[in-house]
Image 1 (cartoon, rainbow, N blue to C red):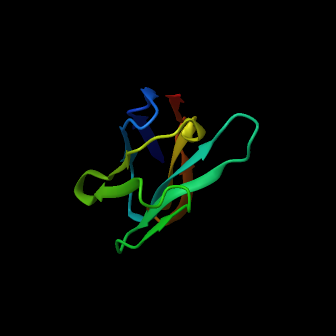
Image 2 (cartoon, one colour):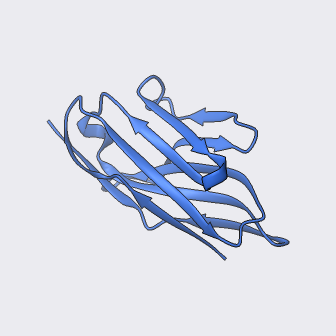
Length: 119
């Protein structure tokens, strides 16, 4: 099995910054993609950013130019640096893992970390 532990959420003022971290642990054989989704109150969950094993990255339009996803492969860890935060970024941010544990493909979601941006 694979577990995800997220950290770094909190309360920040508009135009402030936060850095989220997500550590994957357990029996990890390979990682295809790790990323961040978010869900704001009353809205559907949406992709924020994802990074593949080869290093290619996808960003939501709303995240481009403000957020940066990165990884430390040796630590099975990804980060999301969020700058110029806006009240509309307020959401629960979820880390995701897609990869294998031994021969089994897994898609795993973290518990989520709340980011609140005040105006």
